Amino acid sequence: MKFRIVIIFLLLRSSILAQCDNFKMFEHFKIEDKHDTVNYHVYAPGGLTSKKNILIFIHGSNSRPFYEFFEKDRKKFRGSSVPFNLKSIPDSYAFVIISKKGVVFCHDEKKEFEPSDEYFDNLSLKYRAQQVDRVIRDMTLNHLVYPKKVVVIGHSEGSDVVAKLGTINKQITHIGFWSGSGNSQLYDFPLFIRKEVLEGKLTEEEGLEEIESLFNKYKDIMKNKEDLDKTWYGHPYKRWANFSEPPIENLLQISIPLYVAMGAKDTSVPVESTYLIPVEFIRNSKENLTFKVYPNLDHSFNEKLKDGSIKRNWNKVFSEFMEWVSLN
Image (cartoon, rainbow, N blue to C red):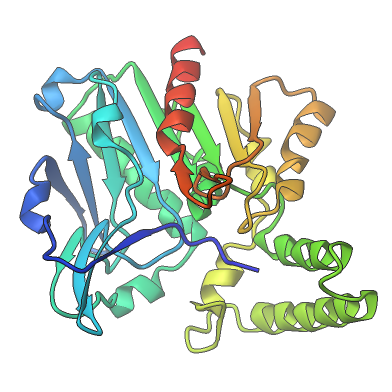
């Protein structure tokens, strides 16, 4: 069972070719008030004034910078949590990414990046949704007034965020909900255990025992909702409690066009949980949903080929999504 963390790390035995200075194509903005600072970053070749639309990407659950370079065990690593080929962004769009609290845009040091306490203090669904809401309002007020389209894609944990965001921001015109569960994240783990039972990896008795242990863990998490010291799957209890809200409750409140994309071979989010979304939309007579499952793709829309190699399909999914945006 794997938790939903989406980041790409490449092991480089030679010198690292790209450093933080190589990302000057992004323009950096800051929203400040007495209580908070939000940092966001815009890729807009030709300048913001040349753009007509806004495209925001909300990434998943990690405390990594968008771009990172470091050394470990005498090996050099570079990582990115921006899965897009920037050249694939349509010319009319300003592409926006938003730093999590306490996480820098780019890190280029000998040691691996470690987030500040601010990151852990603000581990909540509500805070992340409010961050994006503030960025949209700041952009449309100060930088790109009256955009024709405001498109937001949330991937993995970001899908939970975009579902929440869709209930509080009325400027968004299109939503992409990618690799996300319809039910609470806490519901996903019993499903994975049941899958292991059906695949013969666990006996029925072992499965029941694991699920009972899982429920006891959930009880402990919910009794200690603000605890930052106790952790589970690498995240503090506070994060799990704050992201336990079922996205379907928010998605059903959204009336703008919604595109759900899911890989059938996702091992971080069970596709069975995502099927709750079209069921509930049909049951509630809502017709603003486009639902697509990709047969051979995983959580990051990668496909494992017969020869063992990996084919990345992120930009293919993105291209299909943007075509859908243009038609809706």
